[in-house]
Image (cartoon, rainbow, N blue to C red):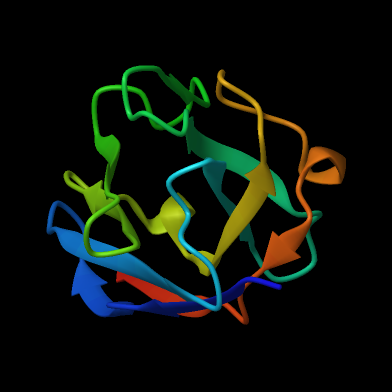
Length: 125
């Protein structure tokens, strides 16, 4: 089992930045592809970004390209989401997810086996 705990969310003004962290425990995530998803009030959960187990390949939703960056530090068993130039429409609960084995990033939520509890990001206009 892999436990995932997100942190780093908060309230920020439009144009500001946040860095989300996803700390894993239970197993090393070095062999896990990782992803970030988000869910805004009244909306379905949507894909944000994903990274391969090596960190050598990433994939982003069009809405966040150029503003959000996913990265990982396998030695620290942690995945990050650097969020720059934030917009009010980025307001959501952000979730970290993990899936064992794939060498490429995964963009569909049904492909992931483990999920964190989420962290709230609120961007004010």
